[in-house]
Image (cartoon, rainbow, N blue to C red):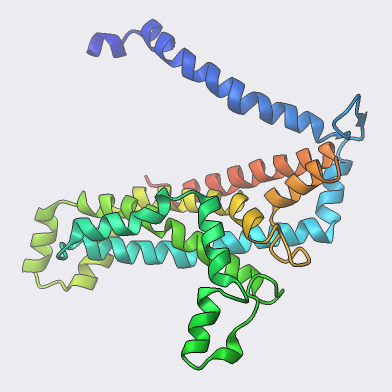
Length: 289
């Protein structure tokens, strides 16, 4: 085995198929989209080269800026609401509660469900006429709170946050749970003998030792929020009045509804660069000697 890993020729042969697949599926589309973003093109015939005009329009358009703001709000909700809940659940389960395996499976079930199905499920919950949420509010005497949650500009965005937070809490919980369980029991036992309480052990020992997995969860959560598409598209389509629109839905409507392939490609390049920037920022934040 060691002779295989020390053979550079063998390594190149094994890596080559994956490398070629990466080039074809990831690198080439990015390069092509970057080129299209410099054109005024409707998807048919030859486009007109206009340089960075699409990018200038994107950063001066109130609709595009609103979409960027919404994606950042999604990212903030994922980081400051979803991840803390996942961490809390992971620490509780890792402490050895009764039914640990059962709860671990139950919390992970939403992750297995298609996002489109999740969006359809929550659209029924939010339905103004027969939705479960309004029915519950009316049954407890809060009928005045019942409303069209996805049809009102002041509630649509928050209502769109909740399904994605609900769906992926279990995903990050499972990653953090694995990280918490990997902490040496000897260290935890020594801390208990020294009189450390459960919260003190969690904040002083378990969470610091989970730093690598926390970084992974943070990156996944950030990227997932910045490129969210299917949930928003099925729930609201970006409405009402673009209240819930994000860059990916704006890109979709720009390309397939108005046939502005150049401008849509510029938005796609922005999403890629935005994800890359925040990934590098998180890596730098978690960098250790």
